[in-house]
Image 1 (cartoon, rainbow, N blue to C red):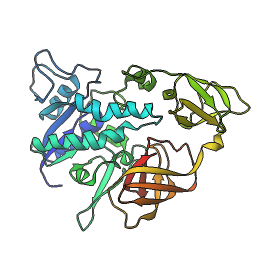
Image 2: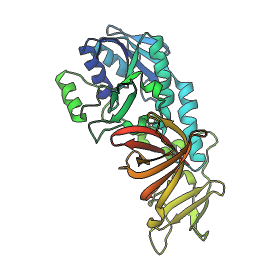
Image 3: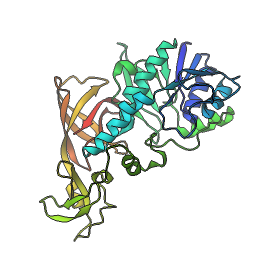
Image 4: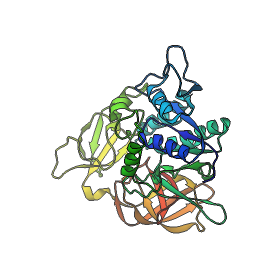
Length: 365
């Protein structure tokens, strides 16, 4: 890698800290960027310094954000604190809330990456004079002879994060680098320890960064205009078998919390927000042979309108052989699975792979 000016997205965790340290050891000129969403536990500003575009250096006297001051002192680089509270609320949090209102189960990370991390932060990086943006994602990249970027699964299967990048426009990914792609998480922790690095954040990051404690139901109920509305629980044929206290507390495939006695265990099969109705049934009824997707994003556009792929329908899904037929005008498509898949959930991302390479992705509808 040639030496250049690189912006590093710093979260406060060990992955981004080690990413920056490694790039600095390679001789690159680094600029740190940390964004403030308004949902952090720590204070977002000092008594006399606003958080917007605040620059911290290793010799800063009074910390504005403890985690960033801690990182700045170890890396000896400037860290710019960017106030994105308004755009984060608009682009990530509000769509998350609206999805639950419409009976979907959203994945906010797949909204955040194209709009915030590899959208707004790329613009900030460029304005600060950086050529590229580095992050601590566990993904690999390759460029072919034509100069086209290819996104591959990270070497560590337990930390691979390629799924979360499928919705990012390829021209944005082309301006990003991922130094940890060939490493395992335990290797990163070991090398960081040897280098004397310590992160401010302890443990792994939460699945949903703006929900402290992970209780999304409590978070939703605290939002303006979001209320708990009781409604009927029915079987697929419409037979009423119980009453729920609010659709937002359920997702497809869920078993616990239905609290409805029956001749067999009930699983959530569907949410009908127009009727405020929860549909339950047998576990085998969760199996689906196909689903529709919208707003397809291609990192490597396929050569044909119908092709074979491995499709992941959620991050924890192992992936299933499938055929995708898509329309280039609407960027919508139809996935047909080789074998039925359980709990295909509207609002989640469907990500398409060719072996270890991410081809693209779309939203399940």
